[in-house]
Image (cartoon, rainbow, N blue to C red; front, side, top):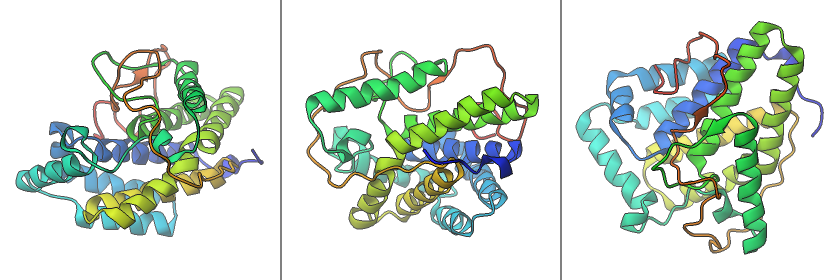
Length: 270
């Protein structure tokens, strides 16, 4: 990686980054009661707009407004969103849009296995575990977003503690993860949504996440090389060898506490 621009990033900026990754993970997951409450109460919209504005990126603010404008605001709308999600992303209904890194990367069974192992290694290095009973691979979009949300909060905490060494370690990890993983395929995922999906909520959400990742690659001096092609999946149904999991449930196992800032806890964006 090249030199990062984190010198101008405050602890509160990292909290807002973490919140955006958390909200995106929540919104790209299968709609549930947590998302419904956030949407209907207006909390999702308020926090998305607040955090996008705080990062002072005009494109990010524009995409956040587009997501909010396309968001359902009542239970009936959330029910419709569930149907949309199921038809687009749900394996049980034959959804064609895959939310996995490996689906967008060229490679063999061996190289794909190495990629999964590397991603899982990032999670383990920061004391993260996957709850039992969840069935997504380590390369699932929501899990990668959750991971970056966690690192954003950890960076904010270390900044407040004045731990320059810790900040450097977590900063490098964010840049490396963007360069080696999420930054390599998120623009392809956004293109897929733009070309194949007519649900504006998910199209706008894809643009928001792609812009956030692009902003962070500059922030951390990452230089991801976007995958050139989308091959058939070589690893359908394979997990990372650490057990089954689903996004939205990985969490820190270390005793270090997170900063008491506007993010809230991992149970929701409140």
